[in-house]
Length: 402
Image (cartoon, rainbow, N blue to C red; front, side):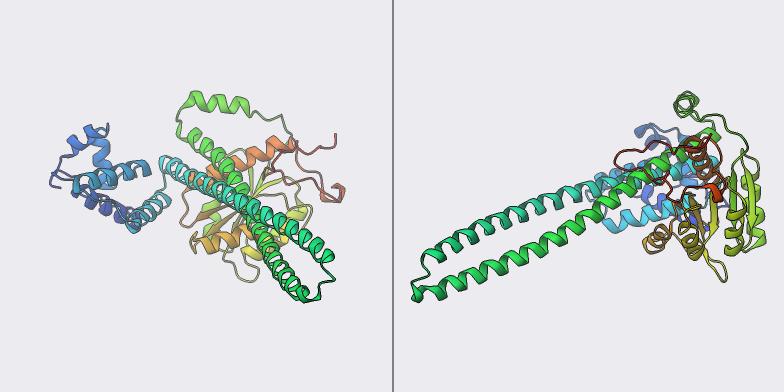
């Protein structure tokens, strides 16, 4: 790797680990090739490829997959699942800790691809479960037909006492088999319902991430023609007043950082330092579009605060973005979604990524609401379906009093 630039000295730990893994993978090409030659093979400029390998820029996941494919072809091997997952985690960590608008766009593209993959896997799982359920129901119908036939035969042969015991045994065996199948059907139906719920949640996340990606691309100035076209399609009606973003964090330094990132935008920022203060703010303001909520707080933590917010009819529709320092592993992610979060962002957060997520959610708030929500005292006792998560048939925006 003598023709590679040295690693940039100001790289953080995550970006350095990913760059070193990428350089090791590049060194596995056989015979050894120069940066210029490999860039020509993959239609990349030598400068772009050199920046990837020195950690100055984070490449797309597609580039990493292409490099894995090329090394495997040269060596006559296939990358193991452990290798792929290690590179995927290093790539995600490097994207998450690289604070730039370009990296925010890459991270959102990566998250969208993951959500789309989950949606497709859930759809395939639903099809398999549906086929199994149909087969079990057919078997139950067949058993019911055989039971009816047996009952008919038994009635005709009731007088033949010597054969009654045989019929009783057959009947009991069939009834037990039918009961077992009915239990299996109930289990499959529950599993199918869960698979469909995961698919709907993944589709909702895909829609949300697409909106966030558009917002990030607008900040980066990428593909202006497509962005203008999307903006024209999703134009929102004129509204009175600016929406508010409620920021909740017990650390003053974190609040200052969050306010600095979110202040220069088309919304007002309201900052509080605890869960109870957040609940009070929601009672006092009826124009809060998004809540940015820290997970780890003393007393009432983020999960408990979110549960209180989602338990109130006046506030349960407000989307919550959790800000967490404990990672986005499946266990914490599932707990957050169960508590009512629509998205996660991990500390130290990327300011461009956070702004893109808030921009997308406030845009949805303005689009669906048109005007700020009415005061809680005047809100109907039975609110309409959640405006954020789509159902199988997308509902019309809630009617607002004139």
